[in-house]
Length: 126
Image 1 (cartoon, rainbow, N blue to C red):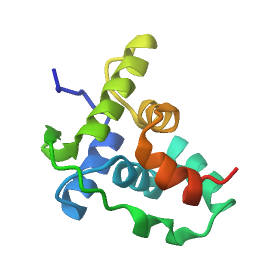
Image 2: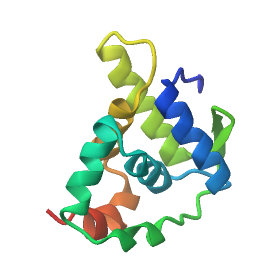
Image 3: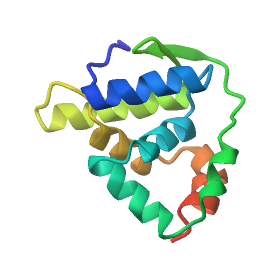
Image 4: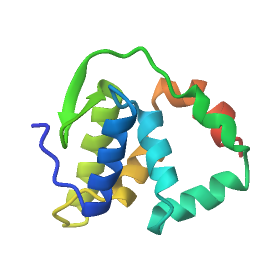
């Protein structure tokens, strides 16, 4: 089941992703949440801006082509795994909508090879 109930803020993020890219990868998703600049998104932006320069977003391309739809936006298989993990966070807290905090938790807690190549080396060198 690939149906996700999203908060209004996550719907806005997904709409921007739809305009920006053909297929959403975890890094595109992370970057759009980073750009949101409110709530947990603002905290993530503040943390990252304090540790790296802002040219990290040029490393967002991935060649994954198996795709699914979330809110009418095509996403790749690693991004689907992120949304499924976010849904499990939502269910764990007894909530009804996937919100950006769930997605951030899933993004930062999911050991995807793409992070090893991009995030770990370029975005979050802690």
